[in-house]
Every structure is written in structure tokens, then in C-alpha cells.
Length: 195
Image (cartoon, rainbow, N blue to C red; front, side, top):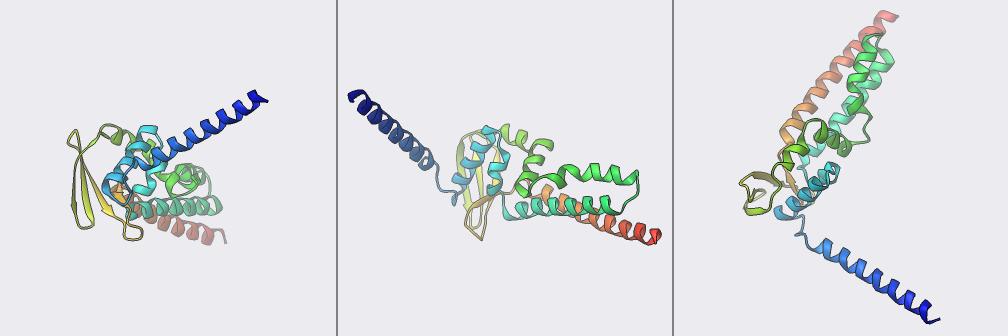
């Protein structure tokens, strides 16, 4: 009976120790409603190689662009498969497949992080924070190596979002919109000719 009681006590102590470690790990980060906290969470995700984990710490425009790219590529691919003749159908369907077949915006961002080198770019200098310069809704985190990462406070929830990838994601969303427009026009033309 004593060995059983000892085992139960040991398991209870181990569970409490695990819970204490978890609480300590959660509380060691500053709030993500500060530039330091957002940067710390991005750095952790980069170090773990999980770009999808820091999608929440991109600025709103970048997040919207990722969802838009996915939606437009998925719609364009479906339209191509339904209306285009071969060999154009197979070529365009394959071209759009990677972006169309991911689950959502965060998955698309993870695809780009690997394919376009976003993760590698961040890995080069995700060092400690030397200073933070905040002016209103914008902030710059300066790393120990001197790299400057711009952030913008997201109005909907106060979380600070990295702006580094916004321009390239927005440009890609515009390209996806143009491509969809062309696909829709060509699909209509193919349907008209088929009648």
C-alpha cells in the first residue's frame, strides 16, 4: 500500500511541476499587445520552423492578402478545370494547385515562407531585442545585430503585426485577381465557342 501511495504522490508532484513549467513558459513572454511580445512569438515560431504559428503576428493587410490569394487561386483553378480545353487545362491547373490546395490563408503563408524564403530571411537575424521605437500605431524592433523590423498595431485586437511581407503578399493578391479575371474571360470564351 505504501508503494502505491508513494507512486500517486510522485505522479501528483510531477503533474504540478509540469503545470508550473507551462505557466512559467507562458508568462515569460511580454504581452502580444506590445511590439516586444509580438516579436518574441515570431522569433519562437521561426526558431521552431513553424511559420504558420506567426501568421497571427502579421499585420492585417498581409493576412487579408494571404486569404485573398488562396481564394482567387482556388476559384481560378476550379474554373480552369471546368471550362478549359487540354493542354491548357492541365498546365494552368498544375500552376495554380499549390496555392489553391492549401487549407487557408495561414497555410498559404506557410507555403510562401518555405517556397519564397520568408522563413530563411527571418532566420538570418532573429536575435535579441536591442531597442524598440514606438510612434503611435507603428513600432520598430531593433535587434542586437542592428536589423530593424517594422510593426503596426492591428486596430481590431491591439496585437502588433509584422509589416515585412505585406507588400509582396499584396502584390501577389493583385496578380491573383488579374489572373482570375483573365481565366473567367477565357472560360466564357471557351463556353461560347463550344455552343
